[in-house]
Length: 351
Image 1: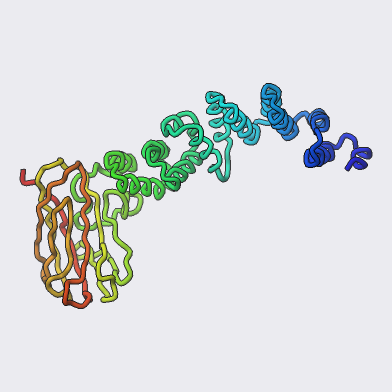
Image 2 (image 1 turned 45 degrees about the vertical axis):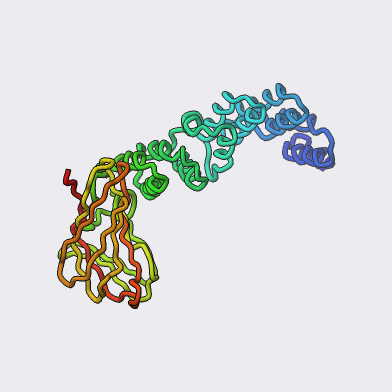
């Protein structure tokens, strides 16, 4: 390498490689890197290396000078990211957030390391969203994926709201996944706000009592709509005439399983409500083992080849409740082989 530099003394790449060899052997590469920087006035790489070397020597002022010079000649991601890391290590919080946001504005690809660093600096979800996450749709979407995968529950509602305001149709599956997460965590108010931000009506009572399919753009299969379980031996299909829903039992389904559910919003805590439904069965013995459950109330669906009405009373303890239909093989019977049809699932309040 030294011979190559003799032949081409102005080749910065040779100087860079020789400096790297010096560092590997424990020698000081500063003079080589400074020469590399002099020969390449628009290159950030030697300036970044000089800055990191100065920091390692315990000279943060010199390190900062070199790293800022790297940014002055290269406004891309790497100098910004390096400065964010430098200020994080130096414990200089304001500068860290400034450069982290700047880095994320230019970021691409995998951003997990950047989000990890933010959460290492603070566990304040609002501070991270306000100070680090720029108004770039790709970054906000990546951040929402990150906090969902890392179970950063306090951060989900505000990050999802920020992404929803950007109104990009491709983000709907991610945003409905966030809605489901909020409901599972008991954050019904936040879930309802996000649900409405996605263009759905305010959740009050049963959504789609006849199991109408509005399409994924309006939350079908998520949030405050019907969610159908995928269970071996169970097939679920929509009915057209009349509108409704059919659940087929092959006889090979589990002895006990959930069939469908819906989170119901807009309820008054401790008020009395009645769940109504119409159902018919074919090939289903009595007792059917088909049961609605909601807020402590339980109602069994009876066997009937003609449409018949049923109801159960319930009293929620909050502004929402989860309605679940399940199947359990009745004692002494074989597993059901037949089908159940449902329609007109609604709630009413006698008060």
